[in-house]
Image (cartoon, rainbow, N blue to C red; front, top):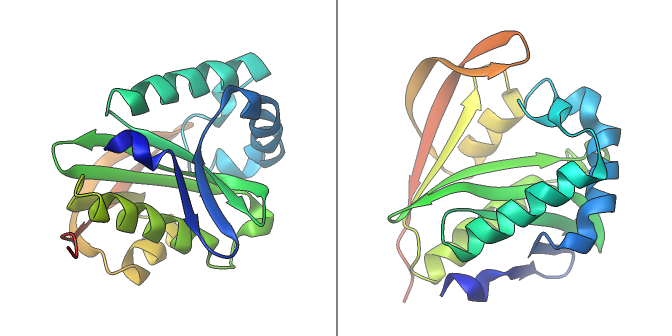
Length: 181
């Protein structure tokens, strides 16, 4: 069932697609363009030094998808690569959501639409019914996204995330959904 979810659409502009090996150069380039900004909210951007790093990650993400462990999608808006939306983990019926957007695509509701598409698709396929978002308390955009999509604040996790030399508390949000069938 999971394999059928390799490409998701929300007409007319949004497509989520599993990363393909041929996406590595463009994704690497986007990460390099966004690195200075991304390193403030994500732990991994500085580890991406070469196109081969991105290719290795894509291969791992694809293997993890087909093994049912994760689901990492490129966000395309009007055909243009805009970021990544993912289930960083898939366990039992629970998925932990992560995402990042290129700066020029922020503030247009694209991230909200992408995350809602993930939730709807995996709920309708009866794969997941519980969705988690963890956001550093200082990450106002991610906290707002969780609240806007109807996630409920569950708890604050102290010293839960290390980004660069900084350690942040995280807010943990949960959304429970059941398939509409």
